Image 1: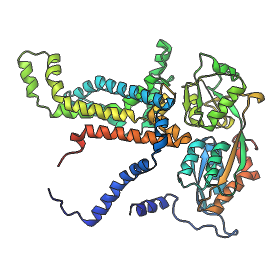
Image 2 (image 1 turned 90 degrees about the vertical axis):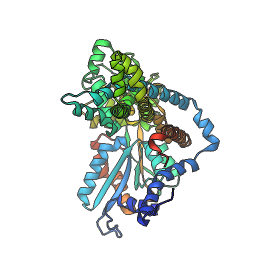
Image 3 (image 1 turned 90 degrees about the horizontal axis):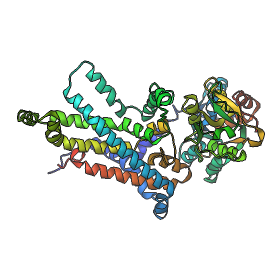
Image 4 (image 1 turned 180 degrees about the horizontal axis):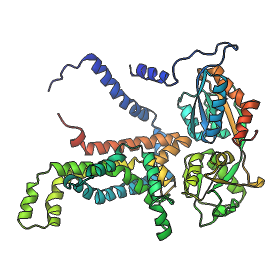
Amino acid sequence: MVLVVLLALASCGGGAPQSLTSSATAPPSGTITVFAASSLTDAFRGVGDELTGRYPGAHFIFNYGSSSTLATQIINGAPADVFASADDPSMKKVADAGLVQGSASVFAANRLHIAVAPGNPKAIASLADLARRDLVVVLAAPSVPAGRYALDALGKAGVALVPASQELDVRAVLNKVALGEADAGIVYVTDVTSAAGRVAGVDIPEQHQVVARYPVATLRDSRRGSLSSLFVEFLLGPDGQRVLASFGFTRP
Amino acid sequence: MTSEPIPRPFAVLAACAAALFLLPLLGLLLRFPWTEAVGALTSPEILTAAGLSLVTSISATALSIVLGVPLAMVYARARFRGLRVVRALTTLPMVLPPVVGGVALLVAFGRRGIVGQFLDSVFGIRIPFTTAAAVLAATFVAMPFLVLTVEAGLRSMDRRYEEAARSLGAGRWMVFRRVTLPLVAPSLYAGAVLCWARALGEFGATITFAGNVPGSTQTLPLAVYLALETRPEAAIALSLVLLLLSLVVLVALRDRYLPTS
């Protein structure tokens, strides 16, 4: 009885039932849910707008979070159609659970940046500066991709640092810097781009740089397989790459 | 006591309501990692988080008693313009999403906050990312539970005992300590336990205002959230422990929430 009620409610979650694209000629329509790394927040809003502009019947619901949290949610049965992760391990967790349709493709790359207050009042020039005692530095938690990448970069630069806080995802790091609670944080280049005006970015030289690779996959339990594939193909194609590039992502 | 007949649709809906609460509990029990639980629960980071949770929740409760009892007294007995508005505003955290509370605390006590910038520039005190911030966040969300409970106790007590004590020459402080406080003790006890339980479960305001710092702001709920990503069995074990703790709170307050017949 309860199950019936819950299933009825759950099926309402994806919006009103809409016709599935059954043939290649019919325009894609329906609603799919995309689980995406929080660093993709702005870029995917752009991707979604572009796709909905082309196919008015197609709608995209985005659920952003740290890739590791999203992977856990998918493995525990969250109704996702597409998963876009900020690292391979999170995608591998989902693939190992047998939930990926086909295989994952890397669709974007991202570099690390040091986010600082606009105008860089504390004159932060390098990763080594982050160890200065007068600075409040926040990182993402080590269980989150951005946190692990940040530790890798600090390791390459030989910098030992105790962060003031280990935030739950990379957007939380960005926000702590934007609010002025932290003097610096290690985020992605794309985060600095999307928060332009509220934070400034300090480049990290090539030898200390860690490149984040973003794999995407459609999920086995997707009930809108063709629309999910369309979303992934768009990301991998030239138009999707153009949108991603405009938000600061690079080609994989 | 005999059971009255319950209309069938009501019985079905009531069963659904009960299942909503019982199924997650059942899930935790069925998935409880018995073999790994001891190891998961005694790992250094969990023990650190547990110790910190005890410190912050008890500190928040103590702070709530020291500040909240006088506030309850004002609400129960004082009359001035704007009292109702102030009372409503201080009760707000009970219904406010905790993350909003965290943002509000940041703009007040953060480094650039309206109070925080003076604390930083004049005294060199920075609250965010410290245990003090975790205590402040917990107090912010939990104190209203104590204030409302104690206020209700003060309103329902028999004032004649205070008047009698006063007429016999007792000073105000003596009356409060020897007459008022013992009379509202049950409310104070219930309010303190509720406040402590709410402080112990605090997540949203803490992560927003105090951040996630192992050893100084990473309390048990934050540890559960992070553990779910890397060590799900630890998260489940911890969840059941916190659930049992909540059950103890409920039993301790049974006179209030579990009326017998």
